Image (tube, rainbow, N blue to C red; front, side):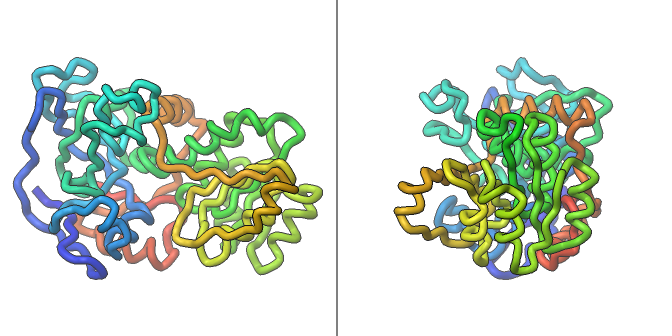
Amino acid sequence: MKAVRVHGYKQDPSIDDIPEPKLQGPLDVIVKIGAAGVCRTDLHIVDGDWADIQNPDLPYVIGHENAGWVHEVGDAVTNVKVGDTVILHPQPSCGQCLACRAGRDMQCTGDAFFPGLSNNDGGMAEYMRTTARACVKLNPDTKPADVAALADAGLTAYHAVRKAVPYLYPGTTAVVQGAGGLGHIGIQALAALTATKIIVVDKNPAALELAKQIGADETVVADGNQVAAVQDLTGGGATVVFDYVAEQGAELDAWQMTGPAGYQFNLGYGGEFRAPTLDFVAGEKNIIGNIVGTYNDLAELMVLAQAGKVTLHTVQYRLDQALDALHDLDAGKVRGRAILVP
């Protein structure tokens, strides 16, 4: 099969011919990939940023936002069958540890693995191995290219909004900083789940125009005056700020946009957060990290997606155009989400 593989860091991946994956255990599932999302994390992987965290052996197949059709199942799989349309939670988890039993899949301490970021090949390929615990069954008429990026970008955005829902009652304000691949999903999730006033900050006018179409009440151009503009719109700071950028100083802007007793949810990464401890004490402000989301979060998000309340804005590329997709994403040319279709 064709697959996009990283052979060395800080260099382009290559498109290789490799053997199809095989079942390795009774709960394994082989999925025929219908679409794979291209994520900024893939750029970080290529740069080697995840090398010390996941320590994968090179070469390996990237791609952690995947949807498609069940191709083969292990003897113990009962929740899906061959031919089912599925979206895949990015981290198959053990189901036995305390974190899994509490529904916190991403903190699994057992036999978890992360296809596309580890020694387990990802989905920028024609087929991928996962497990039954990762498969969310979809309506059979669902097109994988319409939902694949929800497996990570959508899941991460939804997970943060889901956690913030108790704070975002009528009369509150929420700021979304960065209206790109994750942010544009977060805006829709906020509109679907809360009654808060949604303010979107981005430097790109096209992204702000899209934000208006999908739920933003106000938009602010990130032109250097965005902090003051947000403070004016919110009367001193927002109830919740969702930072999808979190680098090059944006993470500190987000903190200044957060009001007293407010919450800054960090979803982007790459920067460094520093703030006086007095800001925490006197302002009773909170900062919260987010990593992907739970299986239940993904199942809930798919209900919204299949009801048309969350829609991915995508640019499709063929699998053999993977390098074009990665380069376009790195250059800021992709509005919404880039999707590879084998």
